[in-house]
Length: 390
Image (cartoon, rainbow, N blue to C red; front, side, top):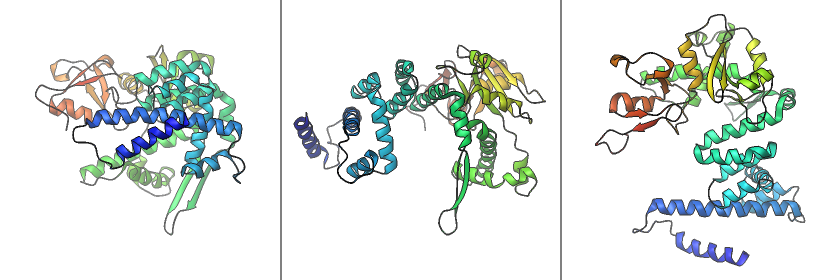
């Protein structure tokens, strides 16, 4: 095998060394071919790395660990080497995922997510491999996180809580860096409020003709937080109201804990335990809604605040966590849209509404595109004569 690999590497090096695609070649087909080669090569590289770690072949050169050895050997950072070793170990106990990577059916990122989830719950491997081919990488990552969270349970939640931290440290002569770690339910109210405040600031900036990264608006919103406790700051941010959504499967909510395959997740934040969701619901302030699901369908919305908002809006926001168009992962700044136009008699009902990102909403409203299907798997249909979206 080693001589074969060396010969293939030498031939490919000669073919691609110039860095140019031949004039008669299909660049898309070339990209697909190299992607397949890359996946096969990565499957082999990770298998070899697992063998190096298992046989301790890295010892003897003065290295403290296999990760230090791998970082130096491959010319990568320690963080990258740690991730590679972690994935190699996980793939060693996930043969179906290892085979899928070698066959090119999943990417390296997908294989890493599935293998690590399968370590926590081996029974989930087949389901996650199927999800990899049916959805986006972001959707798969969320499913894998839920599997790991369900397997971890309350003990892991307590461990994370015991090691919670928040640090401010100097980062250059005039900058400060913020670094923190805490449980999802602790962070959720602050994260959701910051997102809402940042979205408001971004909209105001766009109207003024100023375009800045979302992260910049998040930083401004973070610095305005003293206004919420009466210590000065931007008064316009005090009025920002934000809602924390927790999506829970009915059996998990009734039981008081999630089992593998069940969902208990704070929207936009990450998985949490049912016990933590119940504690979050008990807090005053009315900024939490519990969305109960049965067999993947919304069966009820529990509003924990004093004032109950419009039922249709609550159900719509709970159902459409992201843009209704399949493959679109945008969650911020979603806009409500009537599937059958209101002016044409379309009712303002949950069945006739979905939430779209500004881009897809604009395609429908201003450029004549149609939408078919049901959330979250709607499809955009291009109008006749229009080759591609702007």
